[in-house]
Length: 144
Image (cartoon, rainbow, N blue to C red; front, side, top):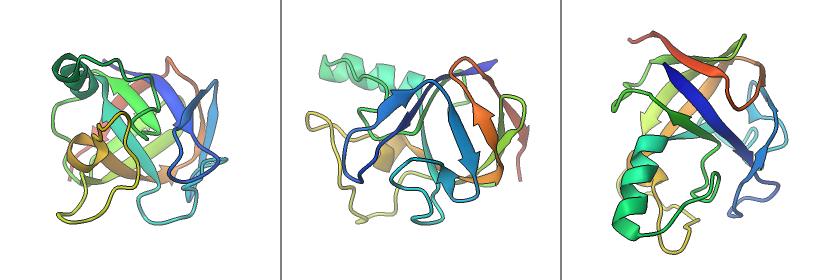
């Protein structure tokens, strides 16, 4: 079973994200996040397992949101294909759009020189909105 460890938002792009106690997802992303309505990559996600590997390599602890992720999830499979639907909590459904960023595409934020979203991050779009809180269960509904 996968679990949502943290939900993070920022009020300004290229700023570190901060954890929140709850978040509301709607078409466009997470309400209150600087990336809301910015592009088709509405929500970013990192697997805790990938963060842990990097922490060991870097000998640094990465607090939730420090790597610019909206969601930090533990227990997801190592690879999520585009089209995979994640269900979070009672109502939220997110579709995986892509893993990482396209070659040469800039990433404007790093934490102490580390940046995981371009390689290990997942970008998702909101299929069905609603509220989530850390501790919510995350399930895979379907894979295209």
